[in-house]
Image (cartoon, rainbow, N blue to C red; front, side, top):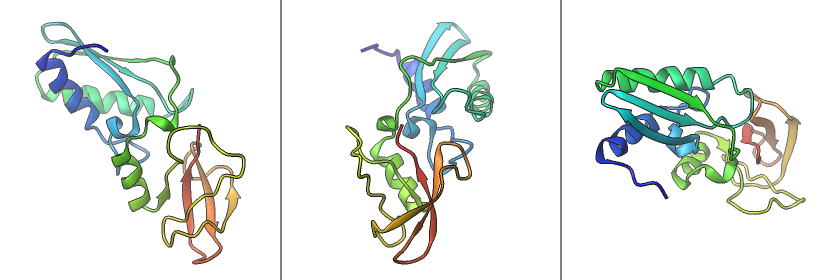
Length: 161
């Protein structure tokens, strides 16, 4: 485990507090894509991000938002580096992130661990597991569109990766 200096911890909190551009109800830290912040020299910082999937178009926006937040905090040089190893998984979404997804009408992925073959997706509106897949892709490639057969409401489901 890497020990952060007090300044690195403060910068990590600022960068981690940036909202995800596709899921603005949760932060990059809650989504689990912020991999690290390192002070390279006075006024020079490297931030490491892992996208939810290779080719995620939101990475550029995440990087620009992080750069803006850290520039506003007085950091002159901010380098945001995309790292693909280890790959991001839905296990990295925090409990708070999962709560916020559900509160916003997006069924969060199941908790950490093996994904059962008979995956029951719970409706974020009424809690029923009687749901139907409408489309493998929804508003973003990392979500699927489902409908609850009990309350008939459509909802996004954050796919397990």
